Length: 116
Image 1: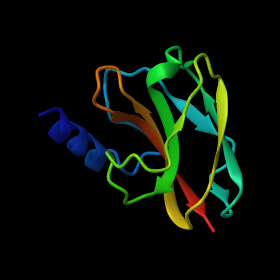
Image 2: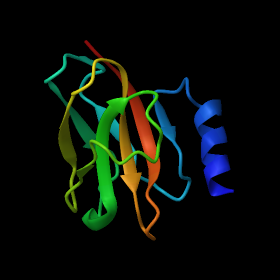
Image 3: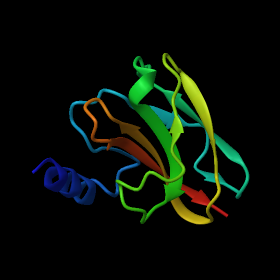
Image 4: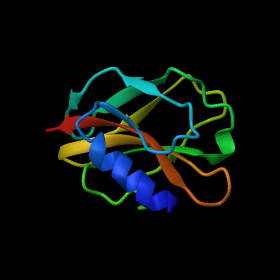
């Protein structure tokens, strides 16, 4: 049921720049830019600090990648206010934040970027 609700939320709000997928998370973020080249990085500034670093990840991935695909995830250090992620894929991509409080990772927020 939770996965179905997350999918509906993603479809309904896919036009938004920042989409919250898991309603129990208060983590949101801003990007220093929305367009970059492969090999360049984007700074992700958290508007709410990530307090529990053990279960938080970030990834910059192609837009169509399944939400549960773990490739390219990087751990977010505890208390992080900002982190940089490097673009490795060209085209329409997303910066995604994941959380795993109970053993089942879920995407909690995302923002679209274009990588050339």
